[in-house]
Amino acid sequence: MKEDFPVFLWKYQYFSKNQLTTTHHEQVNIFNPGIQNHDAGPDFSQAKIKIDGINWFGHVEVHVKSSHWKQHKHQTDPAYNRVILHVVWEDDMAVYRNDGSLIPTLELKNRVDFDLYRKYKYLTQNLETIPCNHVIGKVDAIIICSMLDKTVIGRLERKAGDIIRLIDNKLTWQEATYRLLAQNFGFKTNKEAFLRLSENLPLKLLLKHRNNIFQVEALLFGVAGFLNDPLKDEYFRRLKNEYQFLAHKYYLKGKELNKVEWKFLRMRPGNFPTIRIAQFAQFFHRNKNLFAVFKEVNSCQFLIDNLSVSQSAYWHNHYSFGKFCRSSIPGLGKESIYNIIINTVVPLKVAYGRIKEDRSQIDHAVRLLEKLPPETNKVTKLWKNLDVKIESAFDSQGLIELFDNFCLGNKCLNCNIGISIVKTT
Ligand code: SF4
Image (cartoon, rainbow, N blue to C red):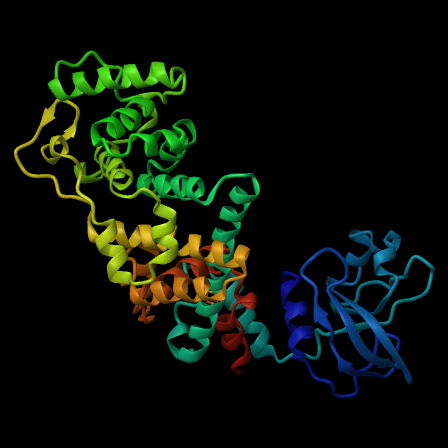
């Protein structure tokens, strides 16, 4: 058993209060179990409890066994001096505060419905990918929705927090957008390489040459490390010459990535980093201030239209430099555009809303997620197989977060769905 179970029992008071006494037979009346503390220190604070006729106000500490008090060295920590009750699953030794006074202890193991314990064990020891897979179908849709609200908010806050840290580190909103967008263009496989590209190639250079797509491509492909080979291809040769000129002018030598940092393996040619870089170049060619576009535009369709870019002519029939292909290579697809809105536009709006205390940006961000179709990936397929409704990107984002941060770690007692399953006896 992990500590989350007795914490859960105490938090929701799921135990029999019939003739409730401490292990030393003092009568206990609980007026308020307290507020759960997720940081260091006792598990609950501001609890109100009457013990042996005396009213107490203070902390409650919870353990699986009372001996864990000593194991965790609470007897030497003054933060635990105000613990008024020690709640344990099993009492295996008396414990004392650092002033030598005995701490009243409440043992829960004989006060809990066995069915509750059986369900807890089922959820937390089940090795299936989604531990509640056999029972989630019986959970009320409102409970699933409430959990998704919680996970989407958590996900947005985390992503916005990453952006806020960039802004705190003196990046402008434009530069932060550039970094984020670059990572987004790399998708999972080339995320790191794209990020390095955006770190090594200053945005101001791209913007300075943005009216000339050839120069934008020369800068991006050059710093990406693609222009070092001795290829005979005419377009390659011209781009290389242009880059050498620009690299000399702007001291870019030594900033180039190594070509091997880019991954092509097991990738559809349309997703090759060369094609993605060419599409990325178009973004800067078309938009002077991408952040302003992302911040000011709230219409989903307008954003989709704005993000629908097609690479320059050479990349319509080349997947790599010098490799001609007969079929025409399409521009940025719908799925990729949705991905950029979900992972770049939405977090930027939330971060901006947080910093500027502009609630409307956050509301628009959430509305964008609600309007976009759900993502299709390994995780959303798992949920689909369990008949969980996924109607928008809001749902898919919430379910991805739920899976990554709750289901994978069997944190079912921190999940509204898990709590409802355990509670239903
Ligand atoms: S964390 Fe929630 S959704 Fe995930 S398996 Fe546990 S109960 Fe189910």
